[in-house]
Image 1 (spheres, helix red, strand yellow):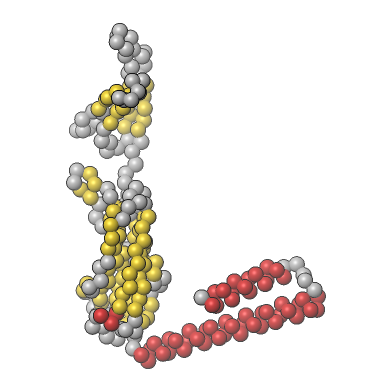
Image 2 (cartoon, helix red, strand yellow):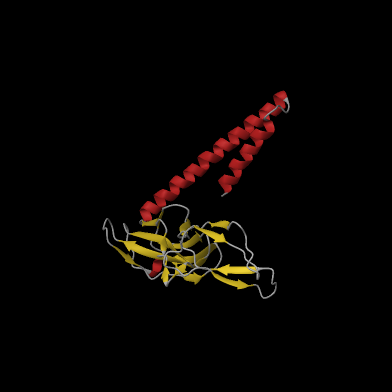
Length: 232
């Protein structure tokens, strides 16, 4: 039941005559029957059957984790790009790439941004800075950021194809749109600060009028979490 592959190779362990080694290339789950026989021709009555479970090597996964979401940016922005990859056995290479989409066109063209590094292990991370001012970008363009991962799997000279992450999109906007976006974000920060201040005042009033009640510490902790998120 070994298809077209040669049967397992058997050899005695040179360091311990009571141990033997079997080696072969396995392409799928196999049952290996072993019959023992000594120098006098005495052997086991029944073969010992071992089931060797083979699990197919899976392609790696790749993700752009920074920027954390699609963003609208100026054509002069400097963007930190971070990619991560993982594999079930071992990675061999991880890189980043950027492509340009003009307006609503379906065709994209590569930009001169292809940092890559040789990696090892089951997880890897790469970080690089993309200076959009290096490219001839105009309002309405979109820059697509992707991470590209390769694993170390190779069988008979055949490797897995590189895996490409979902693209993170940077939409190029003009100065006016950027200023409006900044005003909206600042307004949201101010509104959140007002709500936090009002909630803190309510908690203080509750303590002054009724003392420390059950649930107060939890409410204060939640408020603290909101303050941390506000600073970020």
